Amino acid sequence: MNYSVGQAAGFAGVTVRTLHHYDEIGLLVPGERSTAGHRRYGDADLDRLQKILFYRELGFPLDEVAALLDDPDADPRAHLRRRHELLTARIEKLQQMAAAVEHAMEARRMGINLTPEERFEVFGDKDPEQYAEEAEQRWGGTEAYAESQRRAARYTKADWQRMKAEVDDWSARYAALVTAAEPPAGERAMDMAEEHRAHISAWFYDCPHEMHRCLAAMYVSDERFKAFYDAMAPGLAEHLKEAIEANAARHPA
Image (cartoon, rainbow, N blue to C red; front, side):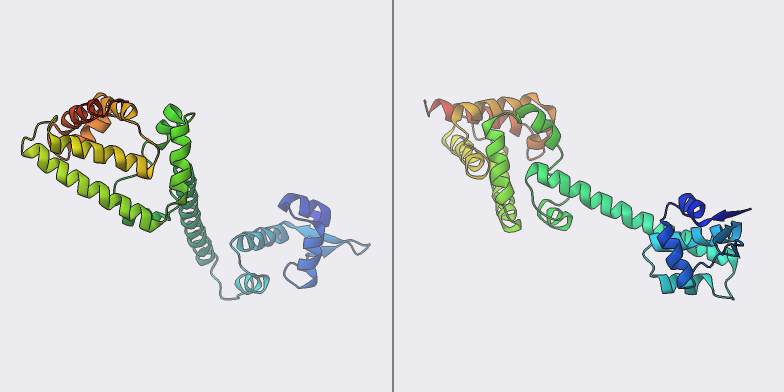
């Protein structure tokens, strides 16, 4: 069986002009010609075309493709192994690219414009985007959420590092306060609750005391938030909730 240039091009998904070019440079010279001088491609030609397109897909220039295919010492099995190695490497590279794109998409949604390496440097193994989709579903239509997105989109790596340092410092001091059995309605606890509210207002969105009360309720009702705060010190989530409520009470609207 042999095929016309149009048929061969259709099988391979390339243009007739491409096959003409391959013929002209000696990369794929059809094995036969019709009586009228038209190109005719046999099974061996199509097999070679498949290999050419494989290497082209991997980014090899045409002269290197020709060298690979025309090496008289090439072992067909070694050739297949080489193709398998190249495909495996390409798959790994594409997976890395896909992961990078996914990170970028998540970062854009969260407004965290950091590379994966920078996010790891800032946040360590804690994923700042863990609840991004849920947050968008719950508060996506609010002005507070929109303001948080606008602010976060402007932050640099240094900003995120400074913010995290503030959080770590506050967390350590509040954990020490709870461990020392300071009462939630005491001055120190209320002052730190106010510091907590001010941090939210400074970095994300304006957080009036009533909104802070709502957040405090969530810190104990949502098991994930409760676990986050209780990991700092046992009972810290409930202690913070009470301190926030006491602080709000001393700041009437």
